[in-house]
Image 1: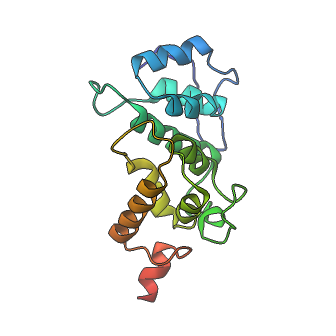
Image 2: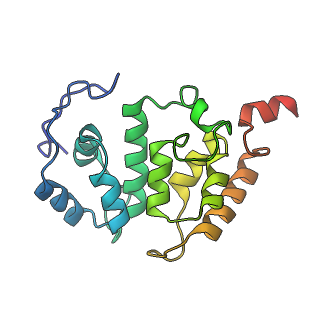
Length: 185
């Protein structure tokens, strides 16, 4: 892994020792050539902060090196890196996720909006996802894998998947965090 970037250490409080220069377009293109991904995943990477781009280019290591499409693992990894740099832990980000927002993009996290960019959906499907507990949102973003890539509307697929994840995780109605549901039951 060494030699691909010139990053210093440190995630605490943001960029830490990371250089402030964005990776060049040629470095991003070379990364895409090494790890093929769809346009939406590449846009997600390209529109991420400099620190996130640098971290992804230096540290991304897929589980299966022989994949022909790395869109899903790259998107998941970018989300994790963004959360680290933005300081979004479950307790710190509950204000954005606890169902108290109005479903608009101002209350949604940037990584959730990026997920919507990767998998276009109507406002109702997005509001349903946005109103879920953070644990459900994280599972949906990291595990969602549609049967066909490149669709123009994933509303039904996302809604169905959100319901399955909520069921699997034992989530209550939208806006209730998992811990609150378990303690009330």
